[in-house]
Image (tube, rainbow, N blue to C red; front, side, top):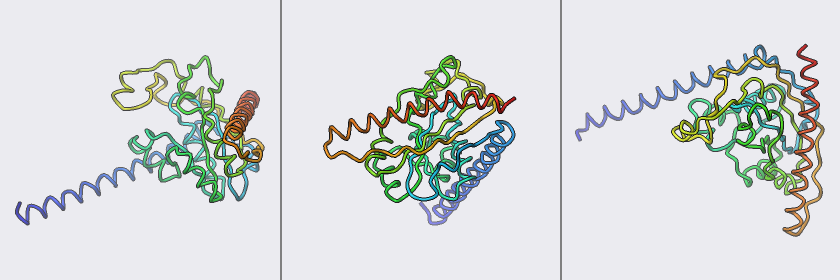
Length: 260
């Protein structure tokens, strides 16, 4: 290959990389503006209980996960980021980071891949970590089962026991009505490499949203034996799930009153 041709290819490659970054930045900025519009105007979001999030030191924010598209994770991160004076790291499934625009946006805003050791390190460093322990199962619920929490993954409880970080329960109301799941398209999910692809409204419906932050739950002292630690983590996980489920049921009524 001639030196001049190699130079041309090198310049073209640099320009393509620049264009990809530019388009990515434009897309992320557009998504940021759309998300703000969703929160302020379309969903008319109210956030209650912000005082329950520690001003410093570690904490695990544990939220229900709902709505066919999983938009609630972006709304929670954005809403809390606007209100808190400290960073918030959100644990996200690996496929999220492969999504065009949304993946890079999430990473820049503090999303980190689900990893128990990484979460423990963040907590050990005194950071805030948010988790959605229902995972994709929370999004796969049909509309008739809305707001019935799916079993929590106990990883957050293990991390809290290990670090002594308090657990802050969070309920999100509104996502189920905004993106009601009425079915799935497995073939499309497989083609796109996604855990599932829902049949739902292509654009979120204008339901009233309410995020409520409950009082922190202090984990028990970490037991010494492995069996005792596992039992303690399971107990703590169940306790937090019961708390979040109770909040969801109560806050649905409050949301309905606020929406009138």
